[in-house]
Length: 313
Ligand code: HEM
Image (tube, rainbow, N blue to C red):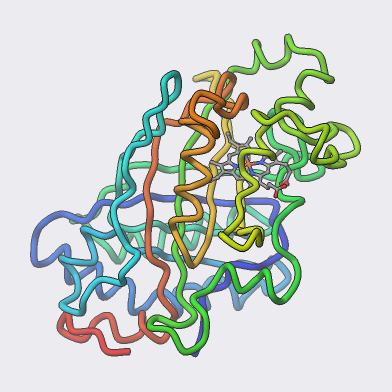
């Protein structure tokens, strides 16, 4: 069983594409064909420059699943739903396919975006395109190191993939949101205040001890546990992006988990607040513009995706 590569070291470049597939037989056939050849496309580009560490992930949205396959939809695959707090909103914008590419050089990502898009043909539209870059030592555009608390141990990495023995073993789910930041108001804050918003120190990236961490800090509200007090982890591969012409400074937020409910809990904490009203202060400087969830099957499943719409595992 071959899982899609998610847990890899952070890359210098990334491309995030959200794609919609037209409601035509040709477009849907081309989508199945592209899914079935995705691994081959990745090899065609990656094999020539292995040192560039090209990795690719393709995800399928809930509505697209129902149109493309006659197999029942994986139980936890539902469309992302808007989360509305008193002050901040996480909109749901949807999408049929997600393509997430990473490499040391942007040309590799560009090429691997181009080939599947070409294969998808006229019946596919890119509704969101973000080209992310590594910003100094893994910092976001707020200036903080982002990704430090990702799971590292064998056990916590299990959080990423559906465990052995369960249906869809080795698959996972991914939720994405595109954020923009109001850097003038952020940069008007003192570093001490910014550290209270995030819950870690800025230069040295050290976590505040739990009792010193404000309850409305980003780290506090994203620390969630199950009934037995065990911390629930997700795997994040956020990347900064921006445009001088549009004066956009953003974070493309992307989180992988085998239980999408964990990300929904985090987002409810961020937008509605824990307790209600005690929302994430990062949102006073950040606006979510998109939101979508996708299923990330194994390559074994993808290889059979073209089987007259009846994919067998
Ligand atoms: C506005 C865009 C975002 C920015 C700039 C951002 C930035 C950060 C930073 C700087 C940290 C601390 C370093 C680290 O542990 O990685 C962090 C931690 C974290 N963030 Fe975000 N983040 C954003 C959105 C999100 C979203 C939407 C989620 C949830 C779906 C999320 C989940 C987490 C989690 C789980 C942690 C680790 C908490 C812990 O210490 O256990 N972040 N983020």
